[in-house]
Figure 1 (cartoon, one colour):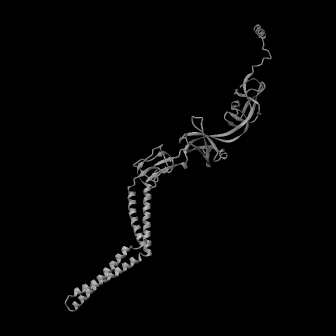
Figure 2 (figure 1 turned 135 degrees about the vertical axis):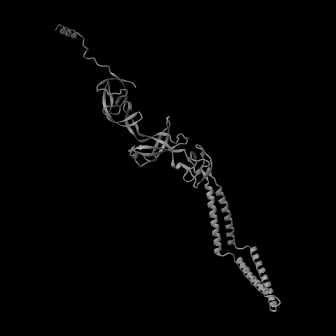
Length: 405
């Protein structure tokens, strides 16, 4: 009993703190809510690829074995440059054969069109004169032997032979007359047409063989560099086995995937910035095409971005980032550092509004995030000041001391 009373007496004698003692103010740094242009940006990742219209596979249209392949991967080639060749001995022999056939057909056609030469006419006349002379001699010989045969001086077989020789001589006369007539008149119209057709056919075969020989020489279809080399000397080439891939690397495209919802806000020709890896520099580009097919797994649509690459800074297969500005407008903004997120409600964002020497938590509605600033759609007015160095929500009425920033 006495112990308890003593303790009470001791406790009552302790000094109590003054009732007007106030906590020290919290030092804060503030910025004013201001207006400026904000940009809504979508950022994509994509791979650098050659443009289909600026790349081509060098392929042989005919099968054959390669006996020459020139440039290597990384070598520049010009349009029309010989880059590979097939073995062509068979094709060259075919051209030689068809050329000889064409020359013969052309000569026959020329003869049929222009008729007989004067020398041929004179030759035909001379042949007719010889035939007639032979016929006269044969006739006279037959008549002489006929008299001898009637007088039974010569044998019958000699007379029969003379008769036969006369018939042959007369037949030769008719043949020579017909030949002279034909030489004088020249070939018939159908003969000329047939000779011309044969000449045209021979020319077609010659041109076909020449074209086939040309196909053994493989030339680059464009200016560019060799990106791939698929075959070497001694290997079989053909329509299904390309020899090399030539690309123009001065203009490339970035293949990326665009989140659905943005596809209706982008259009062909829209400007794009390509961010180079490990560098602050960018390259300008433009949207080439926005795809229509949705990938149900990633919920994205493909987008192709064309980029100038004159300095060859973008290599095929390189992964880059693409920034596309969707919208720009004036807005009230604050630094992102002034926003305080709630762990219990991620959709609730607060700023510490500083009025005089007191702080007040204000719930705000945000919009576009542009770099280090964020658009404020609701909750603040222009000129309001918010704390930027406090990452937690201050109770309303908290005393603060503003420090210059």
